[in-house]
Image (cartoon, rainbow, N blue to C red; front, side, top):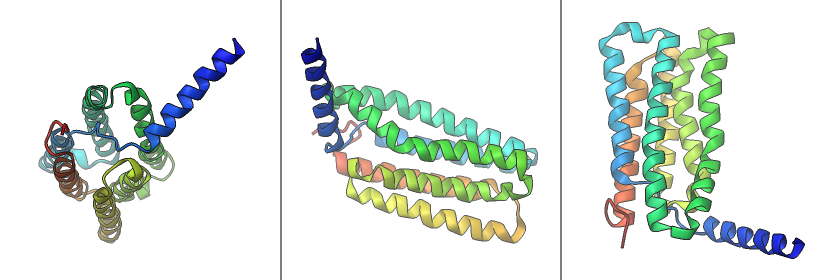
Length: 203
């Protein structure tokens, strides 16, 4: 049994190594672009209804938006990966989630902590969220097209710009989150479309 277990462990290790050096094609350009539109809709609704500017509701709505977008991406990612990566699909999905998980966790826990212990600094959240997205993208670059670094750079710059502008008023501005997210996801979707040769990602 030890030999069998060792052989299975070796096979798993080989698959993980292959997966780590294979371009991940589980993200679809249409769904990525759609998440940007959803973010812009969220920002627009928050602008139309000022009550959404209260810190707790602002963060709750954006966390709900992020969770909904993550579900959409996850559903498509699973289907595309099983179709395009076949036997490597599970390893590729696990790796993709693992790479982005630290940024996602920080994006959830930091706003909650600020609301609980430092509410006066909640104005920093939109800028920090964009920086976390940037870090998640850079952490995933070795499995994405190299041109995706432009998306990471975009979110990094807009994150710091948002922090700079928001520091003047300490106000939560929905559009300071919605507009960068919309254009960032639009850019990501365009890069995915161009590098995968089409929305289906098949050659």
